[in-house]
Length: 158
Image (tube, rainbow, N blue to C red; front, side):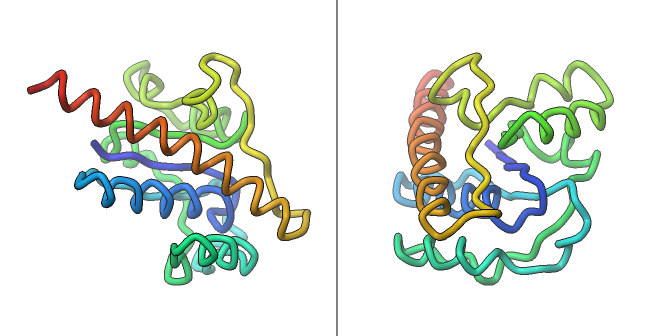
């Protein structure tokens, strides 16, 4: 399975989610692909926010080499699932979609934990390191659920 995470600038939430999921997939012996991107061009080419890097490093994840990129229509072709962090991202991905099949791939990240509630992952950008810590834990819990679903899906296909 190929999974994409989308946030605003691709320097906080989505690269954190990408690293968390990649680590959990690796720990589970899975080779599924994960990536992240954003919708705002002002951070394209930037590395993740230092606070995001600090929190990830605390949990053994290095996101320092990540480089922010923009969402592309071709991401619908490349990825099986696209997880957004909030309603603005859902709106932007939806308006970029080309078909109902594209839209079927898109969901809110926290719907993994709270199905159908369309809750946002907290945006830590305007806050202190504690907000990044909270966001990390939201993403970590959602990624636990996602790995469980991936494993279950693979068992059903066997």
